[in-house]
Length: 246
Image (cartoon, rainbow, N blue to C red; front, side, top):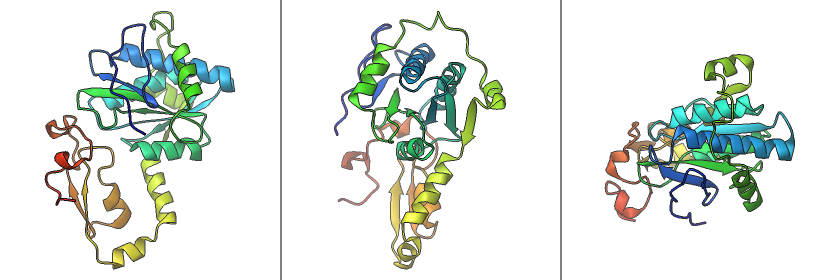
């Protein structure tokens, strides 16, 4: 499914594209707007599932993604949502898997997918792990407050961890363990193949090496670089000059 272009957000007009909202960091993608979306998500969850609904929440490698993710978790947990928080940066497919695996009512990923480095986003997942259905998206949109001024300041991330309202989960390692149970890793290793993985500085960095082993994988751009080397992290031919032609 093709994603819509990122849409600028007015203070009272955040609109989702394909399963999420994306905007320029520091311009429209701010802690205020992330808080508004977290409050909207909490309100929608309470209406649909009652108090104590569960969300899996993760983030990618973009600028301030961890900070935005922790803030969203604080808002959700302070509103009574149980938050299962991915320990480190996590690929979106892993968070999608975790949403269903942990029997969560929804998933949230702080990511702007393939968009340029100056963007970040708030992506929604349904309880089945896939992209949020239109009725979920519209339901959350209807709950977006004009500001967060009417809400109490959320408790600190540390305090919510201590209380159990936020729980850290090793989503990345558990996702890899699931894949090991479904793939014949020994046969792949014995085939003598060498896989080149250009992570494009994204959240998938190191995944193939961990899954198959360092002897079978050549990694490119696996370090953390929120500027993505000056290139959009979209795996199309012009953005992969170090790989051989397809």
